[in-house]
Amino acid sequence: MTILVLSGTREGRDIAADLHRSGIDVIASLAGATRSPRAQDVPTRSGGFGGAQGFKTYLKEHSISAVLDATHPFASAITERSARICAELGIPYCLYSRPAWRATEQDNWTMLGNETEAAQHVKAGEIIFLATGRKTLERFANLSNNYLICRQIDPPNGPFPFPNGEFLIGRPPFSIEDEVRLFKKLKIDWLIVKNAGGTASFSKLDAARELGLKVGMIERPAVPDALCVSTIEQAIEWSAAHG
Image (cartoon, rainbow, N blue to C red; front, side, top):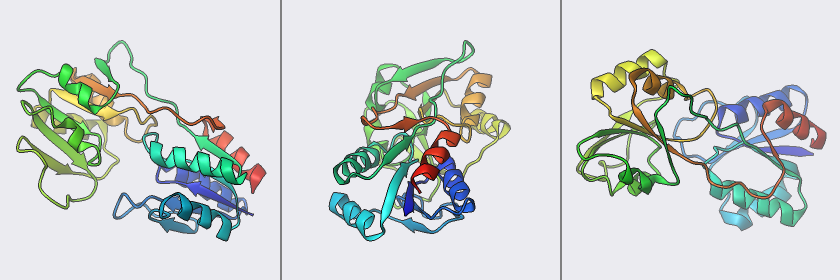
C-alpha cells in the first residue's frame, strides 16, 4: 500500500514528509520542470510518466493505493489526467488545492481570464514584470508595445522570444524588501502573476501593494469533478486513511 504524492509545491513536500514520518509508504513525483528542485525527504521520482498509458502502468506496477495531487494550481493538464485515470482504475484520488489569493482595498488588481487579456489593460510603453514562468511566455506576444521582464528559476535554453524583453534569473524565496528594491530598480509599471495562492511567493504582491503597482492576476483553471481539500491537515488525514 503506497501513496503517490504528485508534488512540486512546498505543500506537497510537507505532506509527503509528514506521511513518511508517520510510517506510511509514500512516493513523491516531480514533473521535472525545474532542473535543480528542492530535495524531498521521501523516495522521489522525477519526469513525466509517458502519457496516460504510462501513468496507468506506473500506478499498477508500484501498487499505488491512492493518489494525492498537490501539484501547482495551474498544472491543469496533470490534474485532469490524474483524476480521470484514477477514476478509471478505481484508485482513490484527492486534490489538494490551496486557497487562492484575494485582493484587499489597498491592492490594484485586474483579473485576467488568461495571459492574452493583459494587452486589453496595459498602456503602450509600460514596463511589465512577468512572474508567470516560461511555459506560457508566448501568450504575451501581443504586448509588443511594452518591455517585458520574465523571471524564472533556471537559466534559459535560448534567447528571449521577443525583441522587447529579457529573462531575469532568480530562485525564491524573495523578501518583500528584495522585491520592492527590484521593482524600483527595473521601474516596473505592471506585475502579472498567476493566482497560485499560498504564502511562499506572496512577497511580490506585498511589494506591488507597497509601491502602488498595477497587478494583472490570472485566474485559475477549473478543477476536475473530484474530491478536493484546501488544508494540509485535510490532505494528510485523507492520505493516512488510504495508506
